[in-house]
Image (cartoon, rainbow, N blue to C red; front, top):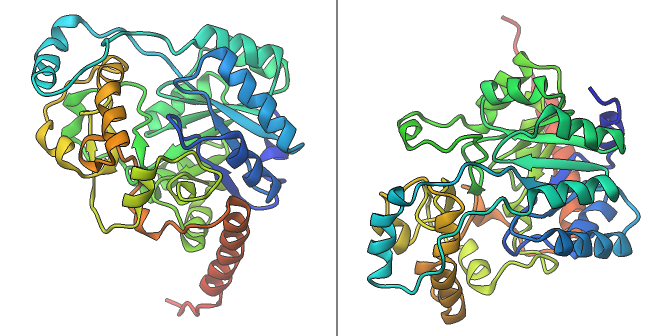
Length: 353
């Protein structure tokens, strides 16, 4: 295990990590603002080429000299065409679709980039890199963080020599980070964050970063009390001016709309604000990234038309509490609220048994 993790997690000014929100919200400006305020910023490299990722790393370094991380999507297997055909025919009857292509999200080139031009931490979603890939990143001084949703996934990450585990609870907005997305598993309730952190604290000695449904200082305090070293927040930052959140998404976040899990937009289970498209396509197959690419034109058209019913509005369950503040100001407010929440909890008298 790398020994550098104490520098990032335990020496942060505040125990707040910016979630890497791919597809628009993640920007160098947002990453830098969180880092400058004492948290740990992460850039999302998902859906970007290695060249675009390099450009964003350069832009972030121009805005801050603080350490930050980069997040990669671990590629999965290609989906057989037969598994897609019925759903694509259904969508194609009413929408213009893109090419339902498979790719590895420029995986090899991005790894090579991060070995040649290291950042403080490289985090992973949708799986765990190999021991050899982790060793390459360790060799250049980068920590490796792996997002997990269960004790079984945590064991895989620990055996591969990951430094930090990002514990993603069911409340989290955006894609579920499960290593394998199996519709057969849908009948099993995904672990909530508080349950997952307790399970992982008992199962591993790796530092935990808790994520899922946290948008307040009280939420951060609860995660820390349960055993996490820091909390990762995504939805909380979607309304910040530095975020690249599109206007349709911004306008819907404060509405009291329930969230739900869906594969309708991307072929991988994800949590977003419930809308008509999600309700009408509850039988979407597990086929990522093919469906992601196929629905890209219809989602782009919906954004351009200001139509919230045909676009993915990723958000955690506590989205209505997300404030509209500059990112640095938000980090400082959350830090103060976390301290107050912890002090308030400690001041409560516990009666002896």
